[in-house]
Amino acid sequence: MKLFQSRRQPADAKDDALTRQDVIDGFRWILGREPESEETINAHLGLGTVAELRRVLLASKEFSNTNKFFRFAEKWILCPVYGGQYEMWLDLHDLYVSYGCLIDNYEPLETAFIKANTPAGGRFLDIGANIGWHTLGLARIAGTQGRVYSFEPRSPTNAYLRRTIEQNGLGDVVKGHDFGLWSEDATLDLGWQQDTVNPGNSYIAHAGEGLTTQKIDLKRLDDVMDDKIDFIKIDVEGAEPKVFEGARRLIETSRPLILAELNPDQLRSVSGVTSAQFIRQMAAFGYECRVLEPGHEGKLVTDFPTEIGRELINVVFVPNGKSVTFG
Image (cartoon, rainbow, N blue to C red; front, side, top):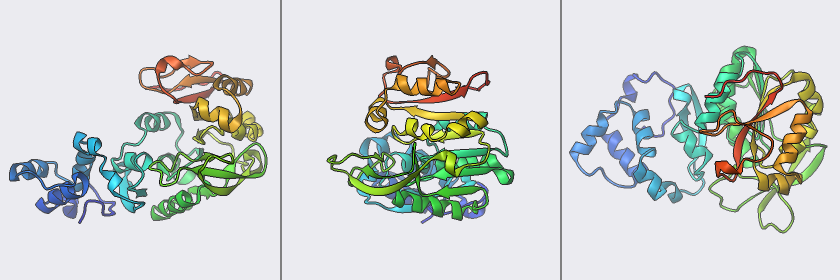
């Protein structure tokens, strides 16, 4: 069955052409049922390729409303992403990151921002890389002349991130690290909910929280990175202020553009600061904080903007005087 088969071929390659059996398999595997009629099969044959069939079924309201992925325990598959340029190991039990990657549309606003604001051949950091969606996107921009440094301390996730890097022959471009970053060298507990459908929601845990935990090594970014860095994507569930405390030299000398997250609850729990304090920390480095959310792109903030109506938001820390493209 070709539905989740690994492939890196042109979309018009002969064996990627959609067949009647592909449509039936797609309905069975993704929607959990048979196509209702020959007319339905013929209509979906008009989509032309397996990739387009997969995208349409996964994006359908029927799939979304019935949460078919709850049928799976942890189950990893190799799937084409970035329009077939790369292949990526995805976990069908993960309803968040892996699902977005499976339909080849994970974090579209952030992905577009990265593409518009990072230089070809540049040097980039992906801190909290998860399974590697943005690592791959940055590798595409870096090319053979640039570098991507990824950091992912959660062992089960890092194992598949490494496999994705190897699968795509990116070992000379992407340098993976299996430790986390902090304000000082330390060994702490990384925790996540047992049987979570969002394994990316892992964070520095405190005793008594009832989480599955793993001891992880933490290092200062200034101690492990000598390169001049053009761009940082960071998503570390509230540890961002601690990471940047340990990256003072890099930030002051490289002045990278930084894509981050404001998560008030996690900032308070993990780093002991408010959103306003975190923004002031970055202002002291010579950065302003701008929102990266639909309808609010580029809005300058000095505290968490509650009017957006979300528990957490994406933001960009922009070096003073730097021009950035939003939208």
